[in-house]
Structure formats: C-alpha cells, structure tokens
Length: 132
Image (cartoon, rainbow, N blue to C red; front, top):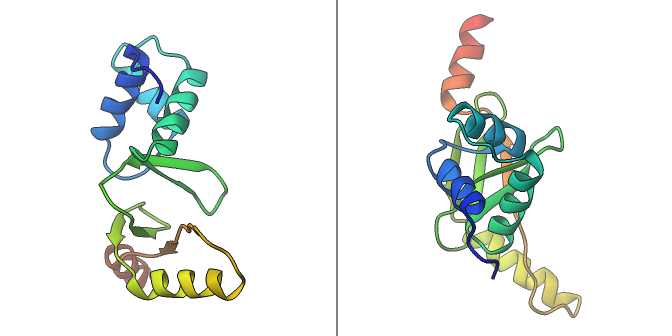
C-alpha cells in the first residue's frame, strides 16, 4: 500500500465529491479550480493507485479514455449512459456464473472480469425521442 500523501488525499477527496465518472484531466481541472497546485501526472498516478487498491472504479469510455469514480465496496458492474454519463451499479449473478464456468472450462483459475454496459438512460432516450 502506498503512503498517504496530501496529494493522494486531495485526489481521493475530489473523487469522492464528484458525481459519476470523471477523467484524470477533468479531476485535475476541478482541483485547480479550488486552488490546488497538484500536477496532472500526480493526479494520474493517484487515480491509478486508488483503482489498483480497489478504492476507485476505473473504466474506459467508448472513446478509450480512462474514467474514474469513488468505489463502493464489493464487486459490481455498471450501466453507463453514453450521453450524460449517468452510472448505475448493478449486480449480475448470471455474469458471475458465466465467467466462472467459462474460465473453468478452459482450465483457468482465479479469473477476474469487468463488465460495463453502455447505452442511453431513460432521460436521454426520452429527450432523443422528443427531438425526432
């Protein structure tokens, strides 16, 4: 475990107060708007460390950008709106069973997986339908 520096704590606090997923650059901008002198490279490192330790969720946007948010406890998956970024944590027992079975059928053990489902939330779907 990495030592807890003021920079790391600043990133943790900023991430915790952010709604939904955010990029390292977005979080860096938010920190600078509050007067923090923290560097962008430090934000990237802190986010990567938090994700590796399970304190932050990390996923890749459809555009390939890494996004982060403060993590809730336990293994979970996400439904993510491609338009507004609304994120809903879901449990997916069927996925868990499938992943274990798929791994075992090929002789794999200690398999891990990440499932993020991207779509349009109900609000964005309604807006899109109204615009047509």
